[in-house]
Length: 218
Image 1 (cartoon, rainbow, N blue to C red):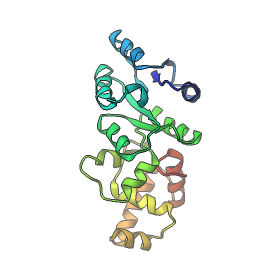
Image 2 (image 1 turned 120 degrees about the horizontal axis):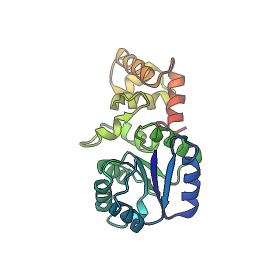
Image 3 (image 1 turned 60 degrees about the vertical axis):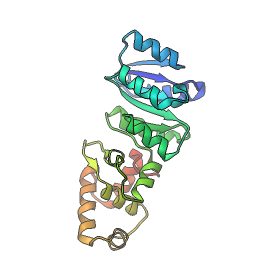
Image 4 (image 1 turned 90 degrees about the vertical axis):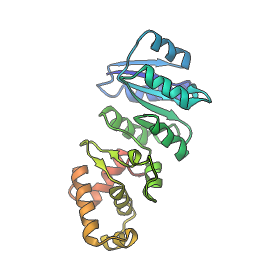
């Protein structure tokens, strides 16, 4: 897999690069430190399978520059790296076509889990964003974020995300039904769907697996 890592923070870039090199599929890793270098690669018609782009190097007009980058490297999945943990910024990145958003303030274990998902071809949404979105019905355009891509390629619906969050808080089926204003039978259906999607046998393992994958905060 041909990968581009574009980041101007030396310590973070070096650490992130080491994490990437742990994956056997990362056979060709290129590193650059600024947008000029990225632009030069585009002019040379270089193409990548996967790109990790630091939001800072995109500048103040990062949204417009991200669109241009996506156009220049049309065959690449692009993951944004950023210090911002603002939900609006992260949702904007996904709205522009990002495959994932990794916050630089994340723990090493969370970054590793994020990379596992991304390197396997899945999307990655920060757990804090999923938790915030699960606390209310989705607004227009947010369904793509809520439909979190799981390892088996199926999507986690808004209701399933909500049930998963309640499970992580230790609520019983009856309590979940009350919180969601649905029947216990409906809650059981959502839990069974979660177990199938996560390939686990019980609700405890569902929570543990979701935390390992970065879908829930540990």
